[in-house]
Amino acid sequence: MTLQAQMNAILARSRATRPAEWLAIMDAGLEELRHSGIVERCRKVGEPAPAFALPNGAGELIRSTDLLAKGPLVVSFYRGGW
Image 1 (tube, rainbow, N blue to C red):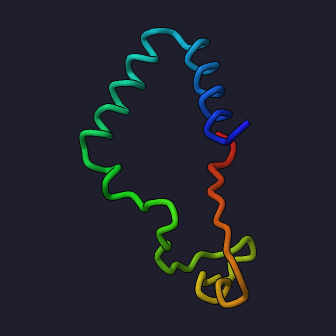
Image 2 (tube, rainbow, N blue to C red; image 1 turned 60 degrees about the vertical axis):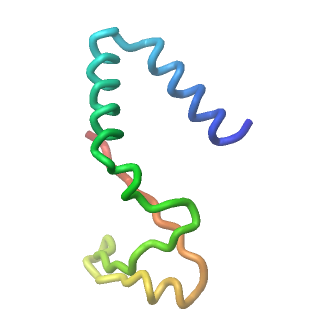
Image 3 (cartoon, rainbow, N blue to C red; image 1 turned 90 degrees about the vertical axis):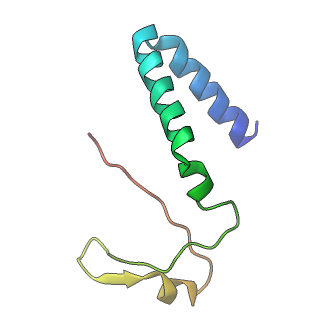
């Protein structure tokens, strides 16, 4: 199963368990985002990300350029437990 197929299945399960009022709010928010032009301003697949520097868990500043000098770089966004 492709990643897209997996994502579609997750979305379908999620939509099947949510109240109609919630779905209406979420769909309206998505439509608002689409009309805002944000999609056109997003990075495209294969487009390089800008250089950045972020602190690691120990508070040390880590630069993407330093990591890229060693090889490919994967960036993962973790939202944490809410």
